[in-house]
Image 1 (cartoon, rainbow, N blue to C red):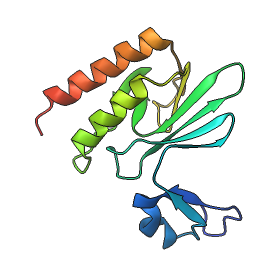
Image 2: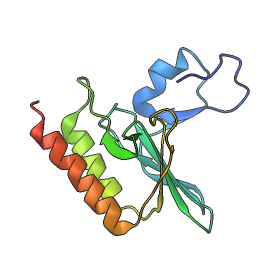
Image 3: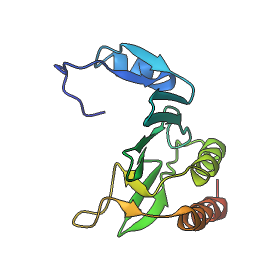
Amino acid sequence: MFAPRALDAPVFVHEADRDSVDGKLHVRASFSRRHNLDEDFEVIPTPGHTPGATAYLWDNSEHRFLFTGDTIYLVDGEWRAGLLESSDRTALLDSLLLIRELDFDVLVPWAATAGRPFVAHTDAAGTKKRIDALIDGIWRRSP
C-alpha cells in the first residue's frame, strides 16, 4: 500500500487487489487461495475488510505469528475488527470464523494505538473469546 515506486522486489498480491496495485508497482503474480510458501509460512486470504485482505501465518518454531493487516487491529491492546462502510460484512464474518480456528499465539496487526504494544499474545481459548466478541460486535452494528 505504501511501497515506493522503485521497489526492487517481486510483488505478489491477492487477485482482488491486482488491478489497483499493478498501476503503482509491477505485480509479478497474484493468488486467490490459501497456500504455503514454505514449511513455515502460510498465505491465508481473509476477505471482508477489503476484497483482497490476506493474513500470513509464520511459524518460527518458538511462536506462531499471525499477521492480520487491518482485518484485526489493536486499540489500547483490545482486538478490533476492520469493518469499514465499504467492507463486505458477510465475508468479514466468514474470515473471522476462519481466523478463530487458526493455531497461533501472537497476533501481529498492521495498526495499533501509538505508544502501545503492537502485538498481542494469545492462546486458543483467548483467541476464541476475542473473535467471538468481534463477531458479536459486528452483528450488533446496523448494516
